[in-house]
Image (cartoon, rainbow, N blue to C red; front, side, top):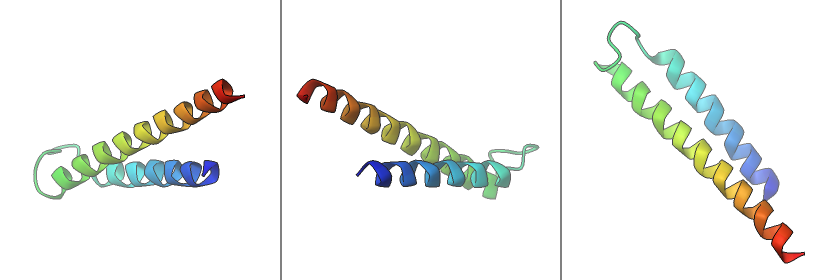
Length: 65
């Protein structure tokens, strides 16, 4: 499970970078840029959730033994 979480974290960072690259910074909330902004925020949220999951698993393992 540890490797799976790390793979998903890497994928979320790659997706966030791709979506940030797609944003038109002159008009970030119009057209395709809106989708890119939403995608970047969703990828960032996914990364944070996976980070919290990873930390919770480490805490659980330390408290178990």
